[in-house]
Image 1 (spheres, protein in one colour):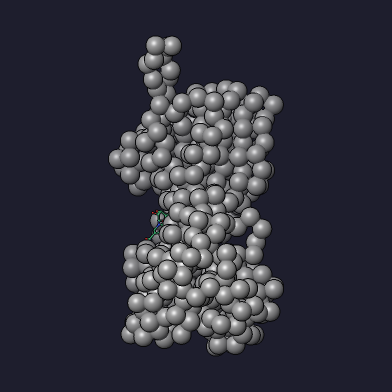
Image 2: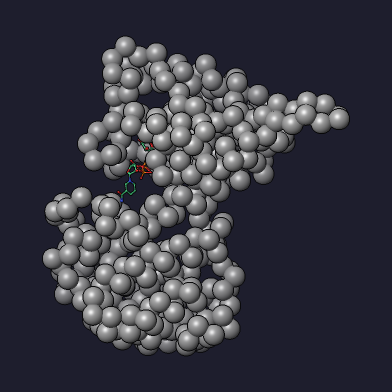
Length: 381
Ligand code: NAD
């Protein structure tokens, strides 16, 4: 069968779902590979690179959707792509089914099987297909780079002939996948890095990466926002008050704040309030990776950079992975390739949507004309 990647249609999206390297691996699974002309150009993969990897280049999206049996994309499909989709096709893409129910129904009605990369269960076996983690890792790293780009000083301390420069102080709120990547980037640039999370189990990880875990003055168990399954839940009012008091204390001290705090299925908790921004030094920078979910900072504007009255830059971009399109395409294409590996146990170029397989079952949101979302909980961890 044939697997193909169209050029992404969303304005400003620079990633591509297949790379020349992933295309070679897909051919080893027995597939022919096609790519729309120019699909990888913004991520520095040219048509010639694909051709050298044995990929056929097609001239437009229409031909691509007509040619390929399996379509791999980054962004959820748009209506124009729905028009091009046909019965029996398999689409593998980010989809966000809970937010795109209408579109999911239309794909089910068209008898297209859709595997949503954002629905891959977060179990050990599926880590190699976990595109959410791949993208969160890049977002965390890039948040630090973006902060540095908007910060007028070094991260690292220096003693120079022209004087002594103190190291920057960076606070990272939320130490999940993105937060840990931000900690890694910040410490490697030489900043004094602090990190906070409601899940106490991450303290050790934070400290092993050279950052200091921020503990609260809280009488109960140190952190109470932790819940089962490794995700956070809503904090109690007392815990929240202790958390905000600690942040208020830190605000005048820190130069850069990177917020990554999310609670599954809810708006992002507001953790960096207006008065904290007001007490920061001019020239400080806040990067809010929770902007898409409403933001952790009161001043965040989604997809914008704003400067507060006292000169603090607040960045609410939501396209950090796309800003590192070569890296993110490489990791995403590898996640897709592993998904194809799972779908093709015989390595014969014939996908088998095996609904007994936890990972495939979890990701499959439409199949044989039916909506198969939400999936039952996975049987293995
Ligand atoms: P996430 O994006 O849902 O949240 C980011 C972080 O924000 C989390 O660490 C969360 O605890 C924290 N947070 C929430 N409310 C907060 C608050 N009020 N103050 C401070 N921090 C707050 O999380 P994620 O990055 O997707 O990862 C969550 C967990 O899942 C981690 O333990 C991660 O290691 C785990 N995980 C497991 C797998 C796997 O096994 N395949 C894959 C990915 C992630």
